[in-house]
Image (cartoon, rainbow, N blue to C red):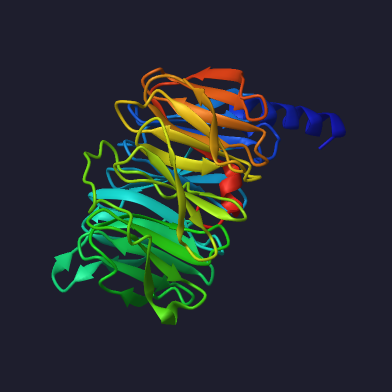
Length: 388
């Protein structure tokens, strides 16, 4: 083959590649869920561009996303039990399976070889090969014949998955080091754990409790010490209020000194001392917080809120522990995501049909992207962070 022929062949190949398959890296890419249409938008966070819409992903009413280690593949967990592997460079579905009747989220293992899904129906966790989506392990969750909905599934160091059992009040660790799961169970952690999180260093797993006061903390460096109750004076027991939307603990905020948590059924953000897990103070906010998320440098915390006050985002300065700005991105703000170094934050407003990009230094709008009922925003930098 002559040199000219080779050049012409390459030119033809490049013209046939999908729009997203331009020769490029993946570090500035991300995915935005369009929940009402069962689709996602692949976005460029540097250029503020919509690159490709991918359809046919089923029920995305509570969808979450994790990424492969090379950031090329996004794994989308749908509420209908769907697990979809998307090639974000090619802009297409690589593989899709229906693995349960109702699922609530997922995680990818420390080595990137396993993808786990937490299920409501039937209760339990299923683990799949990340390349082929073939089933590796099926972990029924519950006590005896009583199955439990699984919430708060995260990856942990040591090739482990950690999750909570909503109906039976337990935390389980599934060690997948040998692919056959070794389960450690912690019973009686508290009533109705509704979500869980892991600290960015992978040491502590915390389950929020909906049925009683307090939270349940497990030190994964010393799991033999069992589960410890923290914030025992905080919760639903002392002052019951209607809860319009359960807060999400996955995006919790941490600085060197403090952890910031959404209060259940209260118009407050809790400030907790990271060293002894004691309540320091509460910051009054606009409504019932859903996501409480820290800018990567820890200087700011951004908070969105449940219905009916869900058109607002507030920004907290973590040094004086005070609100410094109240923003109005649009009706039904559902999620926020910082760019890897925190110079921007993307905010989805479902009912306004747009994602707004803010400069986190000036708090000014720098871009607006129209989308169909946008909800979750997930950037590829999550591929390298524990618990995301």
